[in-house]
Length: 272
Image 1 (tube, rainbow, N blue to C red):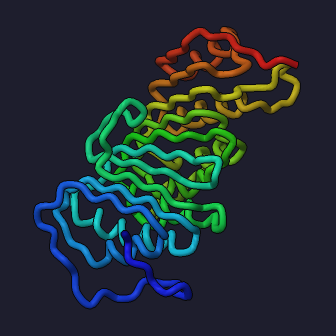
Image 2 (cartoon, one colour):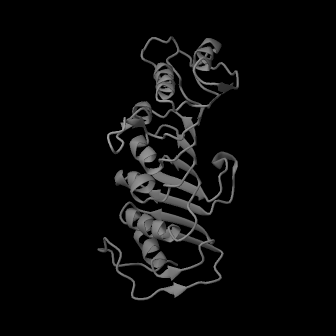
């Protein structure tokens, strides 16, 4: 069992000594977030060990993430990641050191589950402040009935090349992905995610069934794609899978902006 700290503990105590586990290949901890962080803070192990942490309770979640990020900083950076939110308010994050498709890959080198219901800032700490995902190139995000702080996601993963989103990314997505950023030495501003080349949308509601609520998500997406071209940062590939309220004519609009549009040709409209 994970040793317990006193109930009134809010921050992790400084470890007096650490235990070296030089042959450790896999570490899995499950328990109170602060207790897991405290135990992890007293361990040292090879950078190639596979890690899994399930932290319960919002109190201490950021402390657990802080210690995890310190351990990850001693090894090769993560290159691929998958983020999802559970209906219980828990966030799950998986990471790989290889460039791969997170949706189709198993055996991540890091698995994290933390509660965020009591403290929404935990999500921002995970994707941005912790610096765990700074080197990620491929990101897969589940956005089913939950809104991510997309500005923090993109700020924490500035070198993204492939972004896959399942579900409705919500209003903040287009706003965050269209944001400009200042450059140094009086250079003109550029867009966030300057290296992004592939966007994959799955199960996304592209517009209302009767297209009667402009501007729709489809319109905003098209405007963003054109903006990328104007900044000489075009999107090379757009994948559309099982998207709602999307017609062939809509896809043709996007096809005029993106060199390669991969559409599964599924026409699925919401019932009135």
